[in-house]
Length: 403
Ligand SMILES: NC(=O)c1ccc[n+]([C@@H]2O[C@H](COP(=O)([O-])OP(=O)(O)OC[C@H]3O[C@@H](n4cnc5c(N)ncnc54)[C@H](O)[C@@H]3O)[C@@H](O)[C@H]2O)c1
Image (cartoon, rainbow, N blue to C red):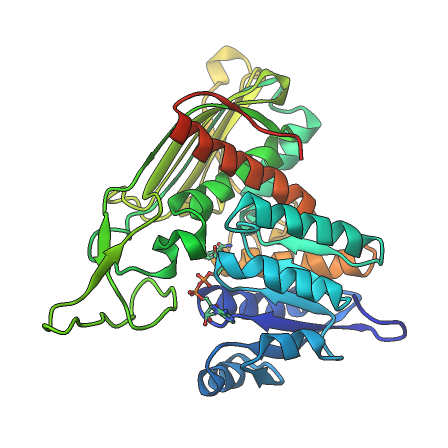
């Protein structure tokens, strides 16, 4: 939170790889594209290797770097701690930041485990009593098409919602992909599930405004049981060096997470839903899709065509009904007004820019363009993820506890 008499927000970011880069773009761009009451200062970045982190700070224009994330949290110039580290780090870092009186923006999933997520939500609640805010990077909420679907569902344009059909399909997790942290349960919590289902569960809850109440059945499968051990503990999908065993062959270790999780669920207001996440759906590169059917209309979104929202208006005369493709690139569309002239496309990085802008708005007392996800909200998604894994293990329906 910006301190009194200071119209700036000092950001301290932990983690310098995939999300560290995406968030750097976000923090740098938000104040340029959006008119914000707060100036966003990229005050300090923390990584594990001092020289690498120093170079990262130089390249992405952070004022200072450190190899000690605890010192970043303690820094007077840091008002908000941005966590871009593997899932098992989230709880320790977020709880320490809140205890130090800092606001927190944490990557998704909120944590690797439901118990960590609960501890984080509890700390956030205590922090809120001291005026501290939390946020989780469910950035797909800020695709203009997803935000538009949320606004339409809220205004009743879809009518009574009956079905949610969501998939998040990628294909980079084949046998040649090494044993990154993403394949280790003690660091990731789960595999494709926490990585990808987390996003689509959040999107389903966000667009419909309804909670998942029950997982009625689930399948979790690990197709690739062993993977090459890498010398780097980083998670970069490519680029880590395989570690050789004494005999010269690359050593392998067990993958302890799912490669895919599929589940059926019930949501509030009688909605039925299906979710599927995998990193082994050959040919599907980043197919984060959701289809929602209501009794007045339906929407379809596919991240591979993120600027478009498909729309079926069932209130039209029958001879006019058909799927239409709305280009969400006009000034009337959420977030699109901040970027380019009509019909000029935006990309993945803009979802981070827009989220940074919305966080800055929220911290200055203004409203975000569409709701942000805080720790309490993200805990609901974590509870659904946990219920799905229990359902797969027990081979039966599992209620989602009201957190
Ligand atoms: N919102 C999205 O679209 C999205 C996409 C990818 C990843 N994520 C999430 O972002 C988080 C990070 O993922 P990533 O892809 O950037 O991973 P990554 O492996 O590319 O980067 C992780 C970073 O954390 C650092 N790190 C690891 N352990 C640390 C420790 N103990 N102390 C300090 N730094 C440490 C690493 O050095 C590295 O800089 C994860 O929670 C992941 O689920 C979100």
